[in-house]
Length: 99
Image (cartoon, rainbow, N blue to C red; front, side):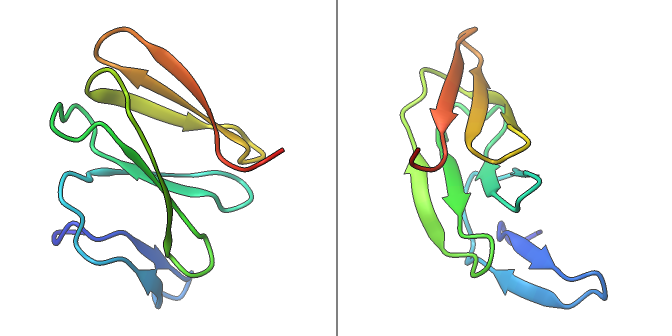
C-alpha cells in the first residue's frame, strides 16, 4: 500500500493481515497454495525477496543475496520455488520450503 506495507485482503474487502511498513518493497507475488513473497523491483539498494506466512502475514524468511537489482519474481504453481531474475542477467531458482 502507500505506506509500504503488504496486506492480504478477503473477498469482502476486510484486511486479513497487514505487515508494518517495509522500505523498498513495491511488488507482491502469490502462488496457488498461498505462498506470498514481496520484493523491490528495479531497486539496486534492495536486493532481497521476503517470504511471508500466508495465514498470519509474519515474515518467514528474507531470501538474499542477489547479485543485482531484482527485475522479476515468478512462483511455481505449487509454491515450492521462486525464480528470481536480476539486472545482471542472472536467474536464480530459490526453494521456498524444505523438501
